[in-house]
Image 1 (tube, rainbow, N blue to C red):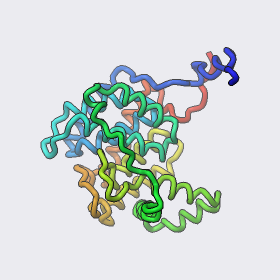
Image 2 (tube, rainbow, N blue to C red; image 1 turned 120 degrees about the horizontal axis):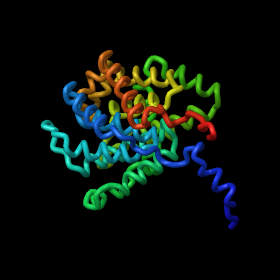
Image 3 (cartoon, rainbow, N blue to C red; image 1 turned 90 degrees about the vertical axis):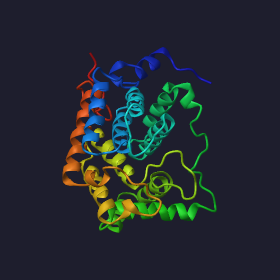
Image 4 (cartoon, rainbow, N blue to C red; image 1 turned 45 degrees about the vertical axis):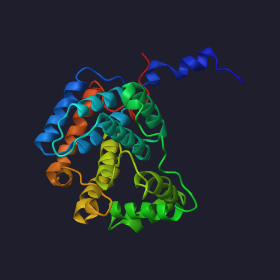
Length: 287
């Protein structure tokens, strides 16, 4: 097998290409703690604020922040639900997995790997090792139906028109979005025990946080803000199999939407050390 030359290696790892993780800057711990405290004051529960902050951190390629979220979650009182460190780790992992649908595969590979390696041994040893999304001849059609149902729930009122528009761009675009993402990742498998469930409402929070953090995709942020609202307006947040999300109904209001967007922006600014998103800013100028 051929080897990479020193020149190619140097170009790949050049600092202006930002080849590695985003380090967690000074002040992230304080900002995340403040975010968790503000969420509690707004009666927004742990799963919601952990989902939002994890999606921001994964989008920024910052697994150190994800580890900090894990430790803050473990020290946060949850009077309505007794949570364990393993539950919090599983929630962060599930959010990181669903980020694939909005950020692509590489950042989820890198951040989930680093997050897993940074967990305490006693927590890591208890994490699930059983896959839950394997497609089989017996579940394929149901998974496709569930994916289409989730799509319809998010985009109700425009659901078929939007599919037609996507197909006009490329005939396989809606096929991949529905079958590769909404069916097999964003919707949750039926009758399969999951160590952490990121349901209809939390999935909308993942979408909003990822897309807002990326920048440049305002139309998609709009779509998923409406998708969050529709989860409550049309009753999907309370559908069979959905777990209640503390503070979810408020997050779906005008004030809640503003709170989400403003706090995502604050976290982006702190985690990036004031440099803004790392998602697609282009190459840095060579110094």
